[in-house]
Length: 146
Image (cartoon, rainbow, N blue to C red; front, side, top):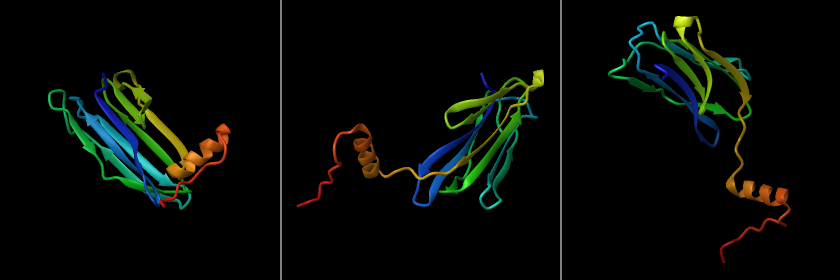
């Protein structure tokens, strides 16, 4: 069981970028537990988010926090850095994947850093045309109302 966790997750693709959010869960009595997330737009050299979450829940009354969301512009390269600590067990999740785990009791402090370029997701019609072309199913047909 992970007593403390932080998750950076994608929420939606919008007209000008991808919306992301941070979810944090604290189910520990460890008052020293914390999680930190820093998101930097490397294209503009701008720090978009730098926040640290501390002790806000416990074993009997776990607390959760969902932060205000952030829009990451298409075409920009972004760096994500997440870290933290909890005595008995802490997880860092990127999307739906656990990318780091640690236990302060054993000197294991989880951290994760990665960089990506935010890319626009193809519109469903464009995606269908691409699949038809890739699968060799003939020309894509567009149906117009009569």
